[in-house]
Length: 330
Image 1 (tube, helix red, strand yellow):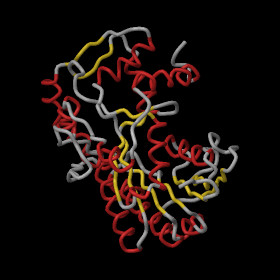
Image 2 (image 1 turned 60 degrees about the horizontal axis):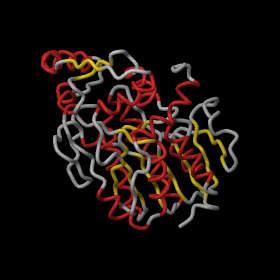
Image 3 (image 1 turned 90 degrees about the vertical axis):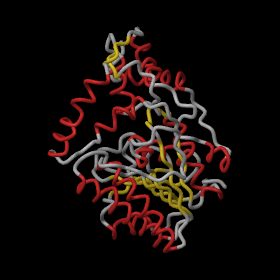
């Protein structure tokens, strides 16, 4: 099914992933309503054909119903990535409820919810499939994104509303603050300092692959009511991921920190973060980063015929012009 001529609302459209999804849907001929919470952050998509910037807050239920009216599809990207649990619950859970209620009122063809592999938490040490229970732990982001998925399913079932859920891994690419800019700054250090030999598996997925799957989930019949991982399978190691950025900086030197001292201080670090209101499950995070596990993509292959197309080497190479533009590479 084509998106040409359809109207799609994209929340979080001024962010990294939301902006790329808005651009892709518009390029495919959809009329995109790009939701922005504050003026002045829409430069990346403002002047694109088929894109209309609409102002609104996902927690304003009546406003969401107004901007969703007449839409065929909704892509819900907006989310709080950090902050204490009440703050993230208001945006990630209550905001999702507001968006899904607007989707039901508008009788859209499908609502796509952008979730994350973080809903599985840090406890699994073997490969993870979509059918496995979510164990988000104590991290506010993990907890609230898991709760948001329950809201999507509940409102979808109550209103006979078609929905799909995508769970991306570490989304990197041009404009990515965490998984490109931060990781490049870490990788360019000579030597690159990281945990151990870096043989644990990382889960970077290039932005174009995530956008490809998101666009497919809006219309594919087999995606109705389903959740899909969107991560590299097979997964690269942390050393392979970081060394890609190190290579751009002109070196391949690595210095591994021993895990034992980090494990010893982890409870104290976690206590400090908890007192600040943002627990991060640090004692579990260390073995998570050393684990050799993959978020399996068998379901997407079987039901959607979908495969990630951008290799890690190619994806990092595509980041190079943006890193130069930002002044991080000569």
